[in-house]
Length: 127
Image 1: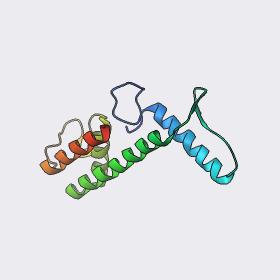
Image 2 (image 1 turned 30 degrees about the vertical axis):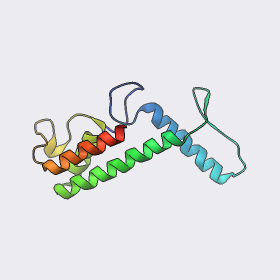
Image 3 (image 1 turned 135 degrees about the vertical axis):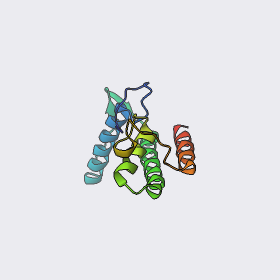
Image 4 (image 1 turned 45 degrees about the horizontal axis):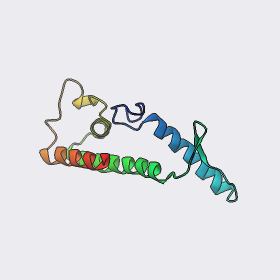
């Protein structure tokens, strides 16, 4: 539910090319930590990605926003499984949540303050 969507699509989760970049960048970072003198670049479709900082920062921001929203929802409801599914649904626009907030329910049980904060945090993340 978090990962999926093609480049240019309207899916709200992490796009597949960004995930591929993140995995390649993680491999390169581990390789450079083991061999400090190694000179290597991240390549996607044969093209070298010169500045990897913006994409890495985006994924870190996505994870940070996920944790913030998870804490907000966890303090409002008692079921951790519901909190995780509501967080994924609200961040990645993945459709209905699981368990008590599934397709036959809605988000009316979540306090207004929490719902507004989730909307504002997601709006900040998209800019």
